Each structure stands twice: as structure tokens, then as C-alpha cells.
Length: 261
Image (cartoon, rainbow, N blue to C red; front, top):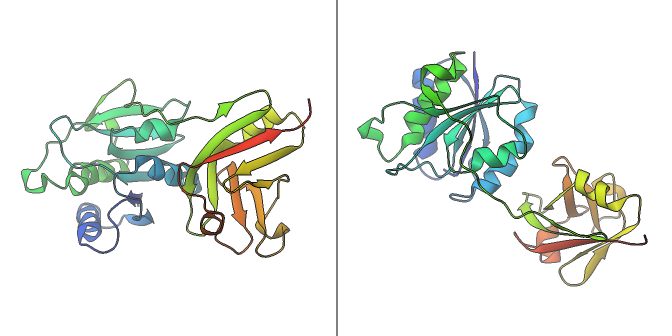
């Protein structure tokens, strides 16, 4: 019995999510469907990539991850299937595959070659993409429904600016608890830090100069920074909403200053 996860911007208000699930179950009645999230902001492939990149490795190898972001049919629409880290990803080739991959290479990459059913012209997620996901979940090879391609569409994200004593990054994600996640990875932080003390600067002249191991390492209501489950530098408030209380929003600048030589 195959596992298919769903990451979409369909929300819970309309019938679209139910139609997608109905399409999958009609093709594969015994499938195990798992919602990762349907609350991605419309067309926000960067947000979807952050969520999926941090979630997919908790699933069994061979899981199919169906990505429903910016999939509306256009004349030049391309849909793709990718095998990466022994997981499968299906979605529009709109840049999201390149974000998930980062500097890694896919094990397999195919453009989906399934005829669009004109009855679902405006909803290919429940047609072309769901058919591809079910095909893979049955254990069938990607080559039966696609043509190999060299690389996915490249989406270039803003990278941290690195100096000898600084890393200038930005807020890339705010989770449901209000924790503010930057685009500064633990590996980059350690590489530039070289054992030195630091000071994290962000909005309202706020600073933090100590890394915490967990959220309750400081008193309730106090701010902290740590490398959480995402492995990126995170600003939080113990049992508080850091984004709201500290005035930090998506794409705002955060800067780490390393002290001493």
C-alpha cells in the first residue's frame, strides 16, 4: 500500500482539496494519504519547499510527495517527477524541485508525459499530477509515463551575505507558533564563527548573544535563538509569539556579528 503526502495551497474552505483526494482514492483505493499542509500561501513555492524539505525525511523511503503549488495549466506548463533521497516528488516544474534539491542532484528526473483531460483543464493537480503520483505509489517506474530531463527549472533564492565577521541573512519562514526561522544554516554559522562569541542583531535594535539548546532554556516570555528542527538559525520566545512580539516578518534582515579575531 503506497503512501502519498499532500502539500498544497488549496486551504480547507473550498472543494478543491476534497476533489484532489477523491481523484487519488478513485485510482488507488488502498492508498495512505497524509496531509503535510494545505495552508501554503497561494503560489508560494519557497514556503512550500521549506515545509516539505523539513518534513519528507520523516516518511518511509519510497513515499510519494505530491506538491500542489502553482500547478494551474498554461501553454508552457511542464510537470515533473523526481526521485531524491529515495523519495519521490511530483509537481509543476516551477522551481520548487531546485529549492528542495539545494546543491544536491536528483536520482531520477522526468517530465510527465500524460495527456491532459480537458474536463480538468483548470485543475491538473487532480488529473495529470494525481495520476503520476498514483502510478509511482503502485511501484511502477517513472520511465513509463515520462521523458528524462537533465535538470529542473532553477529558482534562485536570496542567499546570506557572508563577511569575515558577519553573516547577513533574512527571515525565510514563520511557523504557527510564531518562531522566526532565518536562511542562516548551522553549517554556515559554524564555518564563519570559528569558536568565537557572537551577537545576533534584528529589528528594534534587539540582540541575542547566546545559542540555546531548547525553547525553555530561558524564562517564559524571554527571547532566545537556537538551531531547531530545520537546522537553520531561529529566533523564538519561550511560550510566546516571537514574530508578533518582536515585529519580525517574512524577508526582514537578521545579522550575526562575530566578536574577536
